[in-house]
Length: 119
Image (cartoon, rainbow, N blue to C red):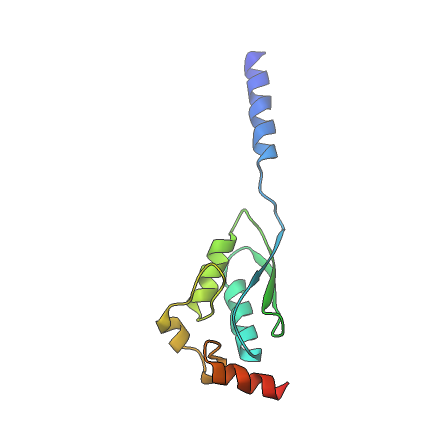
């Protein structure tokens, strides 16, 4: 009887601490154009467990739905930084940033101004 109670207690504890299967999150990602949008979203989808990734050019907000049993925000942000885009938590390396197209150089004020003129 004690073993049964112990097993039930352990099962209840593991269920209580289970992670969400479809977690929703949003984060800010730097970028300026449609090519940035494509690159950012593609980096997210290459992360196992990401089910939805939509980045807004206007707001720089990335809305995500992902399986917490397979990935986490830090992993997703690392993959975004690896393709050259900064998040609030992880900055892309200079090498990754230098690898993005010239019109996507979101750290350059002239590029940002050029994109604002197009709107």
